[in-house]
Image 1 (cartoon, rainbow, N blue to C red):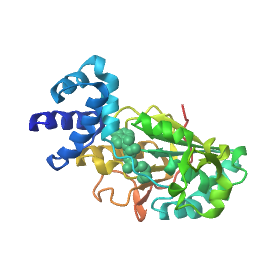
Image 2: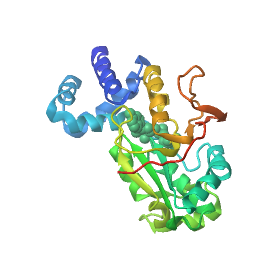
Image 3: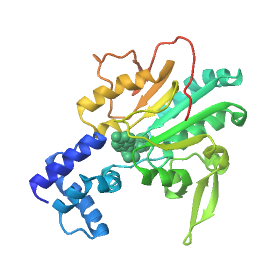
Image 4: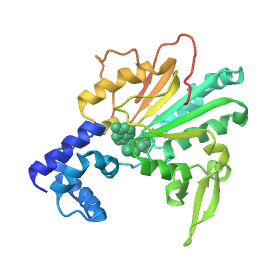
Length: 281
Ligand SMILES: C[S@@+](CC[C@H](N)C(=O)[O-])C[C@H]1O[C@@H](n2cnc3c(N)ncnc32)[C@H](O)[C@@H]1O
């Protein structure tokens, strides 16, 4: 891949998904795009760039972005967020839901589902009556491939390593995968989560507010300008008193013009007012 071809691909990835690839990532980009070329039987990077720049290449453009995203995730990653969720966030939200209120949680950049399912397990462990309550988790990602994996909700034993044995017994059922055993999240957990494709750089079609937003280890791949434009957008869809959890190496800049207050490690909150929640479409 020539420097010009790398720059063209990097420019498209930035424009379409906010992703930043510096020259140091050229060999990674090249190997991921090479796989697409082999799959399509295309002989040169320049032909591939012409394809993804054309109208017929719209679907391939999505597949290219999908091939360039980093999808690493795990259950109960950055576990302090789930402790805050159980101890500080859910008690009030559950009282509100039990009084007939609507509670909405958003996992933005959910990858293969471990994050929204960890949220769902945390809720079910403190609210066995969850099925009677109006609580929903919206889980979105730009990458349709990871969403398909997430919707199935089946994981290897290794992927369950961080999960408490009570959770494993209560919230997973065993399935056969040919050579061994996999674990699928139960319907009780799956029914709480709604997966949708959504590019954070584009329009957000949800109506209303979220009580809690997880956007962790996503904006780290974006340039600073894109990050700065996202925080006020998150504020605009967060309910008064609502929470925002970000990844371990992500921060809202101190001088940022939002009302989010830093209330714990990588944990932010809006000041309280009345309470209203988001409508899932
Ligand atoms: C490293 S994973 C983080 C998964 C999970 N939040 C966690 O912390 O374990 C980052 C995810 O962000 C998604 N992503 C990247 N750019 C995006 C964009 N512009 N809009 C929505 N999702 C995006 C990727 O597809 C990927 O699944």
